[in-house]
Image (cartoon, rainbow, N blue to C red; front, side, top):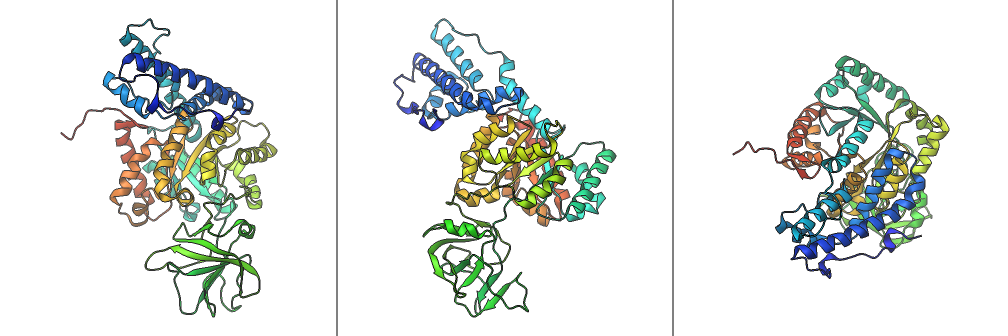
Length: 521
C-alpha cells in the first residue's frame, strides 16, 4: 500500500519552469493540481472504508488533497504569484481544488490560452466554510458568535445555580465537567443547574464531560532533611512503589527523611521499564525537567529504581510534591486511554453528556476503542454523544489525519489543542508551530477546534489580565471554541472574552482578513 510518506516530494524552489513568467506559473500550477488530485485520491481511497457518514466524504477528500498539497515546498510559488495580483495558496485549507482552479483559470486568461475549465463559482469557495459552520453547530449548538466559549465548572456549580446562570448570560455556550474530579451525584447536580439555566435564559448550552484517562503522576515524596526544594543538578530517585514514610505522618506531603536524594514513585510503574539512560522525565508541567542517569539504581529499600538528574528548574528551586503530572516526551507509551474508572464513568457520561472529552488519545485504535464502548451501550443510536479528541502528544499530532477520519467518519467530532501537556511533550518552542498545523489540518477536514489551556489565566484567577494573554485570546478567533478554566473571576473572563471574540470576528475569519473599514484613523 502506498502511504503519504512513500510519495516523493517536490521542492518548488527548484521547479523546471520559469516562475517569473505567467506561462511558467501556469505550467507549474497545472502540474501541481494534477499531483494533488492524484495523491489525494490515493489517500482518500485508503480512508474510504472507515467513513460511514456520507456527509463527511467531501471533507475527507479535501483533507487528503490538502495533505498532498502541503507535502511540497510552495514558498517560491507563492512569492511568484504576488506580482500578478493572484490569490496566494496560503488560505487554501477549506477548498483546495477550487483555489487551485481559480488561479489556473486566471493565468490562462493572462497567457491568452484557451481555458480548459470554467472558473469555479463563488459557492465553491464558500462551501468549506459552510460545512465547518455546520459541523460547529452540530457540536456546540447555535450561537450569535462564530467562536463558542467553553467554561470548566468547579464543584460549586453543583450547588450554586446563580453562578451557572450567570456564566450563560455572560456568553458561555458549553460547560465542561472534568470526570477526574467529584462524583456522579455532583455531576448530576451540575447538569440539572445547566438545564434549568437553559430554560430560564432561553439559550442552548452543550455539556462536555472529560474522561480522566490514565493519570501518570508522582506518588508520595521523601526529601532530604536539609532540603525543601529541588534545584538544577539535584538527583531524584524514582521508584516503582511508594517510598516508605513514617506511619504517623501523611503520605500526601513531602516527608523529611535521612536520605541523600529526593524520592518519589510513578503511579503507573510499568512506564519505568521503558526508560533508558538520557531519557527525559518532566514533572509538574515541566517545572522540573530531568533525565535518567541510571535506570538500574539500587534504592534504600533494596529495590531497583531510576536515578534522575535535574537538568532544568527555577533558580529559586521547585517543590517536588505528590499528585503532580509526569511526562515522558521521547517515550512511546502503550497505555490504553480508557481506564477502568473511565469505563465506569462512561455509563453516566454517555447518557448525560452532549460531548465526550477523550484524553490521551493517540492512535486510530484509540478512537475505535471508545466507539466500540459507545456501541455496547447505545448501539447505533443517533443520540450518542459527540467526541472531542484532546491532542496532547507528538504521536497524536502525527496521527491527526487518521484520528479525524476514524472519528468524524462515524460521528460528530472535534479536536482540542491541549496546549499544557502538548507543550511539555513537544517542547515549548514548537507549540505555536504545531498549534498552527493542527488548525490548518482541521480546517481542511472541516472539523471544529477548541483552543484550550491557560486562556486568560491571570484574568480568571486574579481579575486582571496580562497583555500577552489578551492577544492570545484574540488569536483564538481562528478556532471554533475557546476554553476557560475555573477560577474566582471566570464570570468576568467570559464577558471580556465574548467582547474580544465578537470584535475580532469583524476583522478576521480563521486566518483570512475581512478588511472591515478601519475606525482608528
